[in-house]
Length: 435
Image (tube, rainbow, N blue to C red; front, side, top):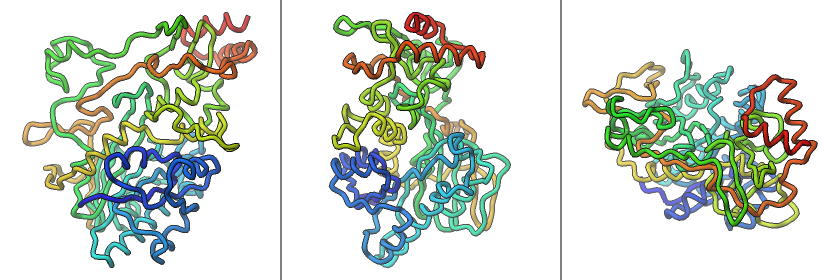
């Protein structure tokens, strides 16, 4: 199936357009209601914003919005994460995931009348959706597959696929730190389409064994891996924590950061990153936050991508929009595989469960196949790339991003109150900056 157009819901700052337009897939419409992202879209992308996604099924069926070849979206993840108190599908934000299915159904209804195949879809979310107590993921998959009841399993694995009555679906957790980002950002990615589409071919890889390069010892006695024995000696992971740029001393506390979160602009001093230092930088031995520009780089966007002007464009709104967006190189890797999928592969694997005519396959991160190869369903691709947090740092940070004497003292106080561990070098700089 040729993919020429897409629609986007919960569009944010349109990582989808940033990835897809350069490879010839154009947006037909967006759906965004938040103030700053809506302003951003009006400035950067000349594409209609349909607003509230709850209205889209009626617009599609009534011919007021076109039915695209591909539907993209990351419906609100707050309902599936600790930040949303794990309210799951009892939260109206979680129910937007079910609205996503209704939008897809309306698209396919129109496409069927037009003699076109079912649309493909791409969905991203936090990993917490897999452990949601309301079984939000089982409800979501069942709706996509065309089942009448949720798919219930004892435990959702981090990868798998479903051959459904209406659609085939595959999912996989991937981590941005293996795709050239200096950020540990694990997200679940779900792709699928009609029964003639084989999403497992797009989202999984065939090859040898995979081991985490950050954890494996660089030795020749570990057996075959994604690197052969000689290549293992050449794996160069980022190591440096300090460099000088035009006379400025730049120091980071880890080579990659914790996951960048949407509230980083206002709540940067009381979480794990405040103790391990992964979202701080020391410039000339003074501690500061990452700037919005550095956060854009941390996600794989161009410099000043969100710096669009207007009263809505503040440092806080930029932080929020960037933290809510997608890891660009991961999405680019997946989209290229989806668009080039040949649909000629059926994996010789026994279903884990069959329900109402659908087959559910729950996968280990590495699954041996009868032909002697492995199915890679881990968070690490076969050709990982790595980045160093040092490489995203700019020396032009405004004074407002530096942590005050009181702020440094506050982090140390909370650390003591919670008896928390702390990066030793960070603690030393905090002590000096709080004096």
